[in-house]
Image 1 (cartoon, rainbow, N blue to C red):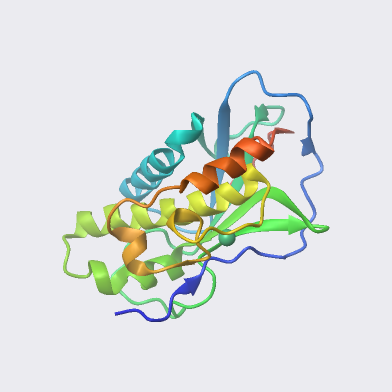
Image 2: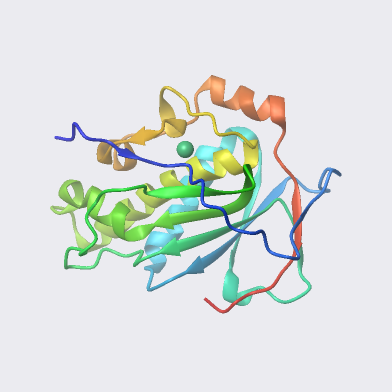
Amino acid sequence: MYTRALLVALASVLIPPLPALAQQNALPEQNSVTVVMYFEAEHAPITLSHLQREVEFIMEPLDLQFRWRLGKCVANGEVFHHLVVVHFKGRCEMVEYPSWEAASGSLGAAEMSEGKLIPFCRIECNRVREFIRPLVKGESFIQMHVLLGRALGRVLAHELYHVLADTTRHGSSGVTKSFLTPEELVDRALKFQSQDLKTFDRLQVRSFSASGAGDGR
Ligand SMILES: [Zn+2]
């Protein structure tokens, strides 16, 4: 039982945007979003696969095509439209031992600079893993990784919503809630509510482009 839901926080961390990153006014020629992923530590391929599947399922009403890239595979000079950079902190796999990092604090964050949202997200894999562990501990090893991927995908979808819709707003239900329980991260489908989709309609999905520059993580 969880009476204490954790905050999926919108960070107010002030970090400078990448020098090559620039917001453009022109609409992209394709309705695609490239997610460039950087991993601080190990991640399970099956978890990553289900993370991507969950994000695409949640984002389906927006009619966007997601392209997933590992940061270490991005070449200098590559240009993207709708680019979002995601840093995965900790180990994105169901390791057997409990993390020393308690399941408290934000599970993810959309970064801000000078008071504005920028296309950078952070996902706290250790916290998400420990947050859902009581719910998944009876599952098979593979299923635990599947459910971790689902949970991470829902946290990432929440942060992508902030970035792509350019909003700090939170909804009263669904994936845009500011507080998500472990059950909401792994149980039945978590989707956008109609009000959330209107936010996208009003603001349009933001367009970014950047010269790719992998840093090898
Ligand atoms: Zn939020």
